Image 1 (cartoon, rainbow, N blue to C red):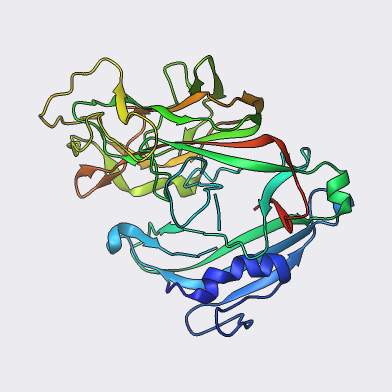
Image 2: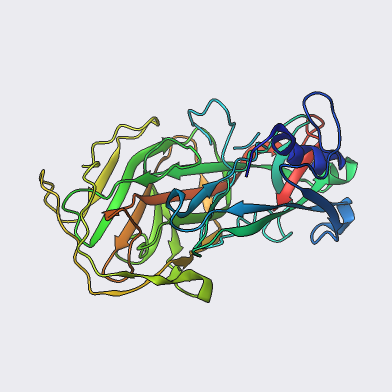
Length: 374
């Protein structure tokens, strides 16, 4: 799909005023030769007393190539200003959300039970980076559908005590980019290993944690040996029950591929990565020797199933200024097959995302809208 400034500026404009804007001139174009999109109002689900609005935006159809082209991936860019505390991105303020095959949901307002949302100001843009993968041998026509639900700033929302949510993104490589967290499988990792980013982020805020979720790639088998995701701090941790699964639905089973190893690790990560954050790099956990030789990863042949669900938790506690937070990701390629590209293990991922209500951060007159969920 060809990215254009019409698409790049459309999401925020339609959410705010039901008008899609081009840089010059400003215009509304629901369909062009490159793409089509349509906007439909929906019945709001949350906070009916605050005059909420909910819009559905459909993009497409557009073509995704077959599996033998572009390594099965079609990356499409929608430029829409987002969210990462302590991140070094120049084009984005923060990363709000990421998901993949697991179809996770970031329930920022806890399904309307918490008067909180991500704050958006006039002229903000939202960046959307979808990556589509076709498992068919022919091209497919696809449509992307996004629901935006929000409440306008008003005396009602102010009196209701609406608060701003800060998204905190922690990943293994520390870059806080759309592809963040993807790191090579370390040498001599074997089929079962743990990746950890120590001191990934030193908190510069204090507040109540609303929601925590994690993300791993195929082969992810929980977040530590007890089957929990741990976002450790200096004096404790927030844990997430490991509810992750593989192949829960038919669409997560790849009947064209079988994983039987051995496959070589790519050997590009030995636990000394520098990253761009304040952390100390990605390290390999467990009792493994890290030599210079590549190690094969043998496993019995079996049908490839993709990760299909992840664990999450709500209202786990607080984050305090000065806490040092880490993120860990556990993999077991014997239990669940990894992704392989060109006969080499694909990079794996470990991401932790928290939504935090900062102390003292109330919605005020400088904000025009507060996103709730999409």
